[in-house]
Length: 228
Image 1 (tube, one colour):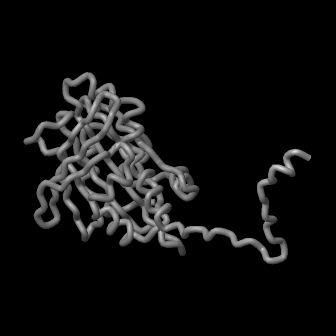
Image 2 (cartoon, rainbow, N blue to C red):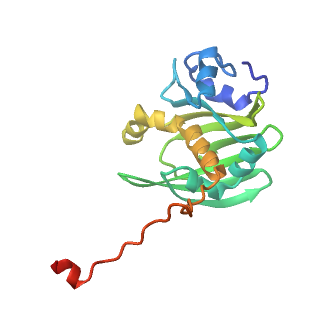
Image 3 (tube, rainbow, N blue to C red):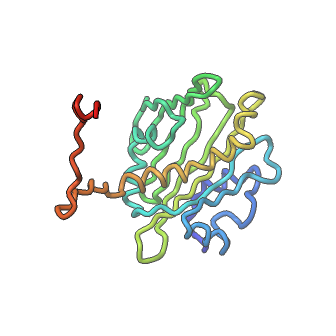
């Protein structure tokens, strides 16, 4: 399936190295089948990456686009979506743009990142980039998160995510981001899916005891019972 409106930000992410598999904005039949089964599709960056780490991922969320967009518009909810985020603070807000500080608790300590978010309501996409004027744990990073309606009788949203991070000369940051770290970055879509679907799942009422088969009342035996 080809999505004509896949945002320009993905071209920016891909400019330093193409993703494995199909072209940007295109999902292979195998990937579509994987999505239909509720699985995530990942494509790490490949090719001449120029030191970048990242890639793209897709997943289907069982919720309408408007609901997913509304939820992701509440920045304070990110702390509940992403386990590694311990604190998120909006520092500046002007129109569709917000500057946030994100604190992540890692084994090596707390890492803080300053991220500029741009909310494009018409395209249903969020573009983000590190604020290079502030002290961040990596040299640069940018990407996008996009929501598209998925065809079918059920209201579902195709969540598309792309990210590229330049760790710079920091070997510790590069070690945290490459390999498993890169895979964890691409799991953003899966974490959002889990959050959206768990919060919309109806709570199961506690079963009431049947009148035909009442639960027996158990009482603690008295001293005489214990001595017999």
